Image (cartoon, rainbow, N blue to C red):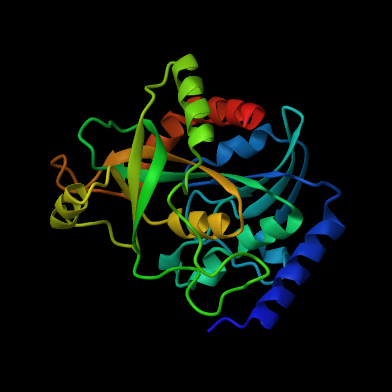
Length: 276
């Protein structure tokens, strides 16, 4: 069980190490999901810190995740980019998974753009679509705020009725239209993984209102909201979920689809950073 004093000390150590390495004060964080790491190449005056060098940071073990924290400027705005994230299915606990969000909070980050590769449940979606997350369903069986509340970081019972900032979503929908993307929103369901869902599970998720499904994002969004951050979520539909089409699922397909829409994704997020 998390102890506030010990956890706060770890956060301070990680934060102080980063401040010694980087002379920047970003106010926006970006988390890049599987196959979407190319956005980090846009960052100017770049300073990259491998996760393994940051005290108490986990390390990413998933193909398509570079595993580094990138600081720099995008269109003149100071940002910090997670090029690769941590997942519950890798064996990390929820506090490990969300540790980078807490560190961002300590660095003064007030806004977060979180991206992921997701399976499409809504039959109106197609592989390659970018979908704004308007809400989520936590099916992971755990919550990163479980245990003693870190009162210095946020309230005991945070409100998630607007977990994904409406104003930011409205701006993003306009940008999608301007870039020739279909302006779409959906509800993201988070499963623990690492196995893909069964067709029966997908039918259940569709029945309770999910439009796409994945194995990340929700813990990070919960913690970001707990810490008072504004959040925008984007899912890249890399495949249709089990049972929607008569085909088997693989991580190779996820990576291939993410690679195919990479340029559109990068341009879209670059414009988001400019206007949010």
